[in-house]
Amino acid sequence: MSKKRTRDENSVNTSENRAACSPAARKKLARDDYEKELRRLQIELVKLKHWVQRHGLKVVVIFEGRDAAGKGGVIKRIIEKLSPRVCRVVALATPSEREKTQGYFQRYVPHLPAAGEIALFDRSWYNRAGVERVMNFCTDDEYEEFLRSCPEFERMLVRSDVVLIKYWFSVSDEEQERRFQARSKDPTKQWKLSPMDIESRNRWVDYSRAKDRMFSHTDIKQAPWFVVNADVKKAARLNCISHFLSMIPYEGPDHKPVKLPKRPEPAGYVRPPMSDQSFIPEIY
Image 1 (spheres, rainbow, N blue to C red):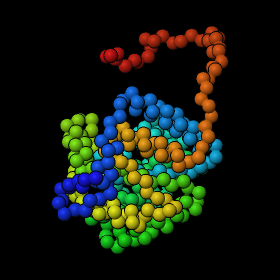
Image 2: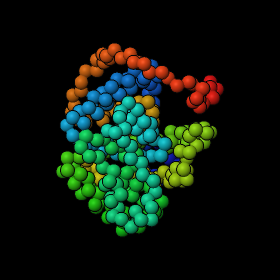
Image 3: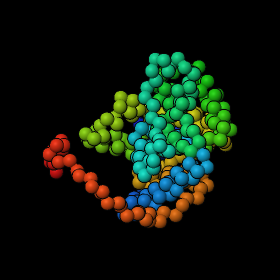
Image 4: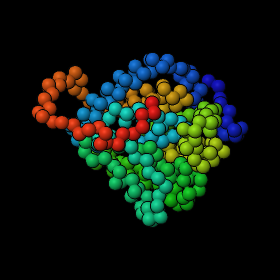
């Protein structure tokens, strides 16, 4: 396995770059095969949703990783066929001035699931170990305190019967740059290029070091990190969803066609004239 070169010739060969060198990272997936398998997995997700509701499980899934690593794409496919009343996405904005005065984990706690719910964190409390550390948005003392307290916070969640699953999306330097360039040209994706995303291009090695130290403190047996090789988006989506399903033993109902009863007659109802209503223009 050959070593990958980053922009920093003196940087270490991180686990992210090593994973991206594997043959699986270069494997392409035919669209038909992808759509067929995604459909199968989404049916299983519906079964899992029923199981979570029936047994009152509290499920937290954390999605972290490089910018443009594909976290949002996986989350989108997970929630696509699920009820938003059961499975919701937590994507918090920059903390307000009031939130900055709170205990660090305080603003995340209200978003934790109750019984029968699944919360998908698109970024999470790990902001402190990543972007806040690299961009100097927190002090050294705040950062060190996070590394000490985060494992205890997560152990507390697990003791409270929370199913906590953590995914790190790993993408190579070259693939991330390719996706950034594609976003810069696509009007529907340019909003994804925030100033922090653009600055991250210059701090690849800093993020690698921050990620390695974060793993050394928070990759605990009660809540280990699972790394997703994300250089191929479609494969990463299927692999992550498949793994997520394997983490919670469940049984789902057989999805047989629902027999609908015959609709009753209108019983004298007369619809008001359509001319009395304001219809939108039919351009298409």
